[in-house]
Length: 282
Image (cartoon, one colour):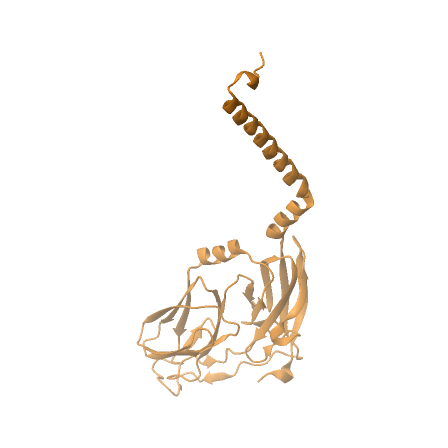
């Protein structure tokens, strides 16, 4: 049996009519909103969030043969603290490491400049895998020689040497720092992002040097022994990449502005070999 509002009192009839009209307007608005949002627009927004690719390449020595690593302190003849430094083995130069077999250059930074897009999950994953990154001092050398971290990670400067060091660096975003480090001590630091590598040194042992680079994004790598690098999870689209090595500086075309690359979702963009020009070695 159907119900008619005409049997209701006048005030209730008006209320019923208002409710009926409101319901129609809500339904009509929903239909209009659905029709005015193309399926392609919805799909593109999802794709933009999920569409990532990989950039890879290799930094190689441009000369005929790999340069030798000269000793900085001969075994048993260190100019400072010889009872510790170079006591059992010579301290060799870490500033230019070239693999004789592949001519690959290790310990260089590869990274995106002002990346287009973000990848928060990749940032979280890096910090989750390694919340603390250790830079040790062993045999009066910084190990590892080059370190890349995110702003979410803690850098632990450690000394495993039974002698004193001092830790010194100067930077744009993180200011200057100079502090003594007693034997077997450590200093923990958090950094903000930097656009340039930070030179780290010990003034007590002036041959000691290393480089630290701090990123506010996850799109970076340090070249391996054969000079290769791979940066995953890069947002698809136009990007710019830099390869930086301390003896040459910017090895990629475009210098600090970076080399333009186009990343496609689900694919690997190989920039090939980046040659390190021997004539530019400082």
